[in-house]
Image (cartoon, rainbow, N blue to C red):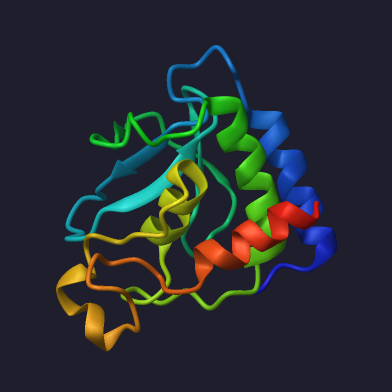
Length: 151
């Protein structure tokens, strides 16, 4: 589902409403599994109680239990910058078609938090999804960087 400009602006207002810069989850890449769901879900922490869904929802939602994604400490942006990148990413990717293997919550979440549009979950089938062997989306990073350069 693509977001209109008005919907993007309302989503950014919701992000601002739920952010708490004192939270340990604020601006951090988080992941979680839902019961009976084999997939990991990814999002950006807004507060101790809310996460931004970088998947199909593209919106904040209430969830207090999530894990910090490990192994990204060296490449992760500072929390304030991650939240800024989240808001900017909405303008760029709000109309991208979500597909489990080709463009999903892990790709977008990692791109926002680390500048790497990578999905380890679909990496084993990278050739079927038009990704690099590392699991990176081939064009998302450049498209986002081009947008950031122009803003």
